[in-house]
Every structure is written in C-alpha cells, then in structure tokens.
Amino acid sequence: MASKRLNMVLEDPLKGRAVLISECTRDGLLSFPEIRDSYLQLYPAYTPDRVVTDMIKPLICGVRTIAVLGTWCGDSKLNLPGLLKVFDVLKIPENDIRFLCVDGRKTAGPGLIDHLNIEFVPTFIFFRHNRELGRIIERPLISPEEDLLMILNIK
View (spheres, rainbow, N blue to C red):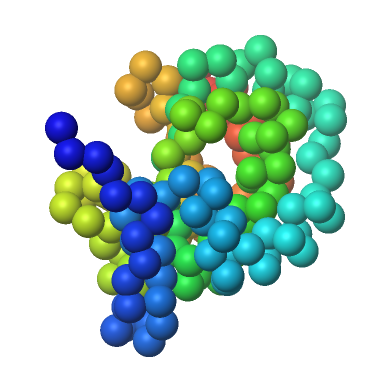
C-alpha cells in the first residue's frame, strides 16, 4: 500500500499563490504561513464557554470531524483557530479529525471531497457511525462550541 502524501503544497493559478492541497495534518496546517499567522493571533485569544464545553463532553464520544478548508480563504483562517481551541479543551484525539485542503476551485484531489457536497469553505462536518450529524459552514452561527452542541443534540 502506498503511503499517503500529506501537506502537499501547490501553486494555485486561480489564487496566484501557494496553497496546501489534499489531506493535511494539524501540524502541516499550522506550519503553513497564512494559517500559522492567523492561528498564533486567534487561538490564544479565544476562550470557549466552559459550561457549553462541559455539556458537549458526554455527547462527543465517537464523533469524527472532517474539516474542509482553504489556506487562501479568509473564513478558514478566521474560524479554524476557535474550533481547534474547542477540540483541544474537549481533548478530541487528533485521529478523530481529518483536514482536507482545497484549491481555489474547491478541489482537493481525486475522490477526496466529491461525495461531501462542499460549496463554501471552511466546512466542518461531524459524523457518528458514518452518519452525518451536521455542519458548520463558513462561520459558526453562535460560537464553535454552541454550534457543536446544537449539532450533537439533534436526534
């Protein structure tokens, strides 16, 4: 079995700059200059609501997340740090989060996001037992943790 190529950089002619493409790791994302700069500013400044995160804790077990984002995208740079902070407070295992980066045409590589119906980035999709529970698209309606709680509370 061939090993996956992670954190690939591509010169995106549509955006006129280098972007991350395909599957990425958290470390790969956070080492990419545009994402890193935003993360270093926004992650430490964000404080998730403790009452809400405590309500999420019993509901989050078995939930997996696919994060589809663009390293060129303002909303991705703005909203990824807060959601990562919530994941860290909840102690979500890194292997429960899959990061897929897209180019300016919102493609990520053969078959990676075709089945996900992505129109806008970032799109954070939450699954349990391979069933989609809900999405945060572009930006949270209230906050990352409150939106996640709403998604997890839907029966």
